[in-house]
Image (cartoon, rainbow, N blue to C red; front, top):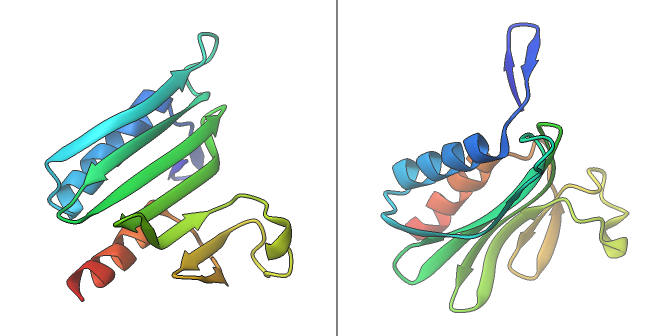
Length: 134
């Protein structure tokens, strides 16, 4: 969801996908990516989902978003290295995470789970850059 002054701009699924691809290819200098899945409602182009994978050297980033009437209602952003998840942001309502103050939003780092205040793809990418530099 974008805001412009006092107005909320509802996202179209395809436009959001294009924005995500541009953001990640620019920020992380990625040249190889694959749209793994996409579905857009034939009734409303602001409802649907996509999953896209961005290939890095030995890692890849998966981005999944589900939009409903232009709002991101479900997301999962993952940084994977050799089948091991290094970092993931998501809002899946895991029963075991109900004690987190930000439930449903949470952050996986290694084998641990942390609250995720103000989740965003931009914040996720910043953290990915820190991990990739080490």
